[in-house]
Length: 565
Image 1 (tube, rainbow, N blue to C red):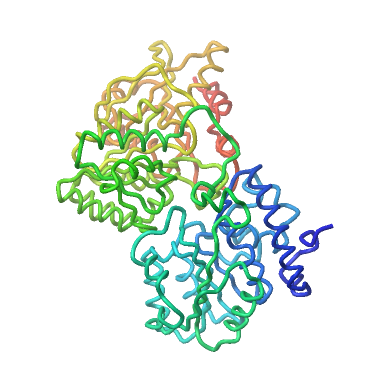
Image 2 (image 1 turned 135 degrees about the vertical axis):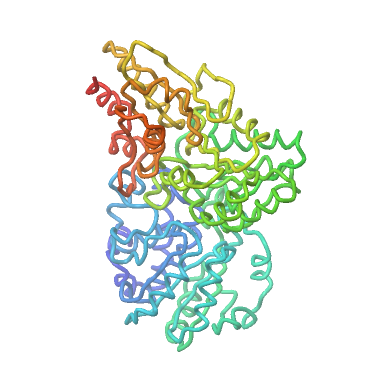
């Protein structure tokens, strides 16, 4: 029997010898590697902090002492050491262990954190709440590329309450850490940094030497002043291929598909467009590989911009490129695009600037839980003046929309789901602003399905196959533009029973836009049903299970259509 099986809380670590702690670290590595290879998840980031996590939970008294994970994708060892070993095989599965800290899951998870640069701000609030224990923030060097961290440090300088900041420096965020801060951290020596914030500082702590970590953390625990511990770690530690390619092994998926992902299609197409148009720039916020921009970076290095974990800056900087006559494309996950709301509205849309957003991971996302769902962007983008919103059904339509965006004047968002392309359609009508296309037209049917986005068009297509077997043949329309709407088609179908289908929250949704259109044009009595996500938070589960739970899978749509007359 191994050591890990007997660890039910951090208290159980305190009776172990240093040699046993190293043995425990290997057990943790084995469990994490085996589980992630099976379930998928964040691998390299978790392997890099195993000894550090052990040492933190050995020295401090959780949950009286509060540990805050910045980003949270490095919390697997923490979960295994806080009573979740027996359930760890359910990691990122339906009703299983979440891939990020989650306050509903454990008293040891201080905050639900899935976005970067938040830990220090949370800590500033916690210390003001007069806790009895220590407040420990575990942040990465990548998190210090985000402005929110510096807003917190500025506030922290005015506080008298003690805080402990552990800076996990692996020279990586998700992609290679970029910018001045990375170079600064690599060049500083003990006592030279963070002094302007009133913080003590210890540098060059070996993040894989448990004895050294325990000594440094004990010093921080006994210190009367706030302190930064600068810990050097290796991302992917203990798995050779992850150490060699930490970016490639940041997130691991056990599934391999024959067809490429929407992200890869977008990146390859944009690079090809940039061959012909020297004004095209590609922007990422520390997500080069995740958004498919590796090809662009290799072929157009001078027009590739990685700003670090700074989505708001990326959007406002894109506005400057547009003001200078360039054509910027900002590739960003839907969930991280939320962080740039004001910059998109104030700096781009109000001035009607030519910035295109390639919105990755739009809609329901498998495995990563509530912090990474792309189910809100339609609602917040719809309210922005001048914004055009489009959702391609397949790779060909994605490429066609990118071609369309090149000539389009003004802000535009092209949104597509995570994962690989499953269906390529035979119908591809030329792209015109606000124009939809019929995928199955049956004027004799009284039912019309308006599906938007690759996931929901696929769901609707499969539902139609089932319905046709039962003699039901509704019209199916690919509503590839959410804004503006296709008024011609909406006027054509106003006398029919209309079903909108989307994997976005219903408040402010595509369905809402259709309802608003009819009201604004004094068209009443329309039979409209909106299928989407009600006012709820999506928990950790697979995409198929989340679709089913929200009545958005093919069988649920089939059954709903059968109830209509």
